[in-house]
Length: 203
Length: 203
Image (tube, rainbow over all chains, first blue to last red; front, side):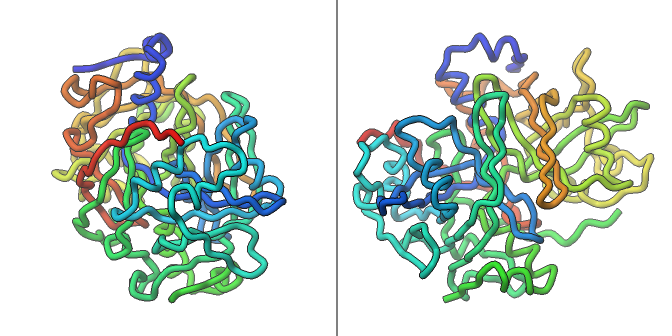
């Protein structure tokens, strides 16, 4: 039996705590987040905090860490208002993980990690061409979390690009066919095996 | 190729849109959320919106739908300040799904769906005894999302209960050993297969 409380968590060695708390909620959505700066420099990083906020209007939230000099993503989202989320596939998840490295300013993770930028007219953020499920978002609200300096970015789903064959008749994305991956903690990569869909529950 | 924009999404048939938008971000964390009312009635429901907000202090966010007469969970969280998140296992995920049904007031989903309540002294919310990873949280902040009437509940990790054997040396929870499941959309259940852990990425 392993049992720790809040005060014991605060006293943990830093990286032990980071690994524990990052992995505690279970599997997380895994996407590559694409943006572009005002002067046209593209940026890409993996993000595992995307969460469903509502379907009507279609809203998705993501958590961004405190703004720093190197954090181009939040800066780009604030200046353009546009960003993309793109699923991660088994053939190239190592390249997606590599996009988390701190590249110097002026280096695009698209080029550095071998991804192709894909654009739509009048949508000012790059999609990942290699992904099978691509979401284009426009910022609706930025919520500052004073507790730890993070920002919850709420965006409305402005574009969805996928294949007809990946969509079930009822609108559900078939993530098995899409080959979507998931992550636990910071760096443990998984490919989910489908068990079943369950009917709407009634008492 | 399937490509829709914001306005086409708004015009979709309601349940098609719900299924599409709920499944678009990929796999989601899957937990049973346990609470208790002021007068001692326990409550349990599946939640797939839990997201990592920070490790120091240890913070987790969840999204709660607009408050309604039947929504005991948010009411309980507000009145007691305590709640739990408990992972879902292959042996009983159907019972976990069943806890999403709208049971009449006075019926506990613990009893109705066959789960055993587990309590810690001075922690006013029930854990799910059958889970292998149990998180106790205390409310830190409630953020109202005016865009759609939802509430983002931010809690600090006050208790972690698991098994020593499920913890890696570096603090990461081993969700393969824990048999943690994941969900896509509203009702598609998956068991992830581990591929590998990748080292910290450097340019």
